[in-house]
Length: 499
Image (cartoon, rainbow, N blue to C red; front, side, top):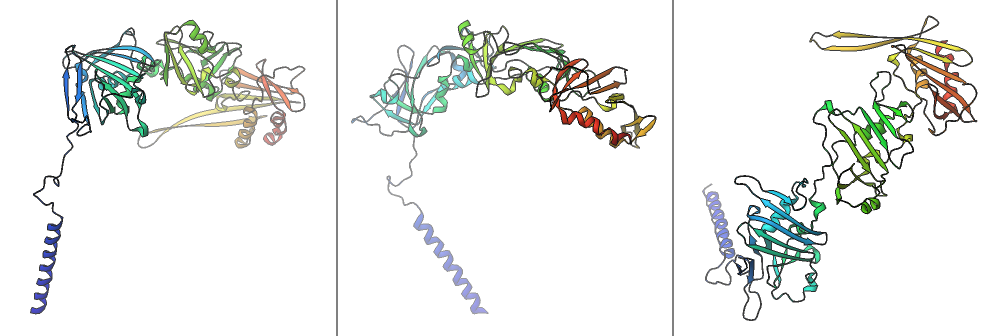
């Protein structure tokens, strides 16, 4: 037992000794400055202000003209609150930004000549941040030779910044370096060319349109103002104006009625998309500010393809739109406004709708529980009497449950509700095949009259029109053609209900 303990102690000592030896091998050896770890302190340079008050940066070079440690550095290191104004000249034009920073408050920016316009949140800050402080990752050329190779013979942007201390800074922006390494920039009046972060200096590429607020109009502040009393769509793309009004009746589940050019229930999907594309609109981009009449004509807005007027309790909104392009984009603007916006056409469906799209899919689709009677006239007349009762029950926890029960009678005899419901689907789900087909003559082959609880009624008539179609006439006005098979089914399935 004693020998075993001794052996264990020897093994432990050997392991410890081996560990110490490994540690000594890998520890850095002293006594040599060349082998010591070094820290990159950046390029040696002097920052100053010349006699004209312009900030300059001079990179220190060796006697042979080479840069001792070509590395990173800072051209200027201010904060946006130090800025008084920014003058930008680039391929999009010229702009001037004024900055004002009240003590203890955020900086307020204005665009010269556009003081009354709202600016897009974050854009002025993006430009100011780049103008206040700019760093570089490398010096590309200390003498500025071969400027054309760096896009600096014809710079894409020239920026002059004036600070509150009356000093200035100048940035000249060239092309982007290969492999996304950065962007070539000159600073002040020195010839030195630097490599700067592309994302930072891209702020100097922005133009007036980029500064404009993309919020076209505001959403309703509360639900009371969210519903329009009328929506009128017109324009050069429409033969007649289309008027939509909310469906206040409980006779049909449609949200909107079409009151012009003819009266009927609106397609639920299309009308809902249109009503949702009027308020609270946010553009993809601003195309133009203060367009001329010639520019409006080129954009398709001098005689707009679509116009919409929506009357809300708190305001009336009027917008105009061009015809959507092949990429699904469209130019729109406030009627009488000065900004042309580009937006996805699916966000403003009224620019690409039509009467055909807005007409209901069905000839008429009343809610069955709103009816007191359904009369079907073919070779004879069939009168169905409906009665719907509503009951409310309260459970032990005080929660109320409301239910409805409908009974149907024919010739004073109750009809099986399941069979009638199936037959009612045949009646009320007859689809319109072609809204443009409206020519009819003679007498209707089938007439269906729906009588409501308020004693009003809707009458649908079906006139033969060739071998495959019938013309549907609702309350004396043709609404389009429908398939013969759907109409004939009304007559053929009657016997299953009344037997």
